[in-house]
Image (cartoon, rainbow, N blue to C red):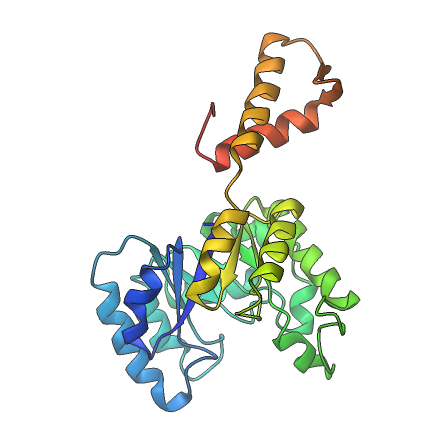
Length: 276
């Protein structure tokens, strides 16, 4: 999944537009974007939508474990393609959700929204077979610790949240699941979004969440391997296949070795290709 687009669950009139955006997945929200008085109505709208066939994967973001709404949310989300679990605190939170819905679809924890959650980012491997990936957020955490903001004056993340982003990235890869970049809040700043998404792809994230349909095309572009990158990856693989006993080779005047081969194979796998 390159792009995962949030849609308020109580705004069913937006569901069709969200599907038309080209997002690989929609996240129908029952949590922050839906006020308590509208949560029941949102569950009904989502349940009706899940009863139809759609070209994108449909996730549902439930309310946090321990909330008054989680049981009802989980019953609705059980028929989705995936569940987004906010305020997750490691494998224990995933297991708690599975206790509510044993046949739950793959779960995507938002894994950095509480201080304790940061210290559990390395233990998702225990439930990796039940995960759709791992993602993070930098909005709830500063509020939880009394920080004024998660960002510097130039819009970049302050050091504590850059650390959290990195730990999420490594936690996902340690568990062997996709690492999903967090949202970019400036809807109209297309150039900055494109740069942010490109950095995420460079750093090892495989997709990114979006908050508006207008963001989807830039995100999809950033997380789609270029034709040039695929050609190069295929040449790396071919070079080692032609020299099976070699630990290191030269390609285009540069040394390549086992990490380059692993990277090339992973890129081709993401693109669903063995050859460009």
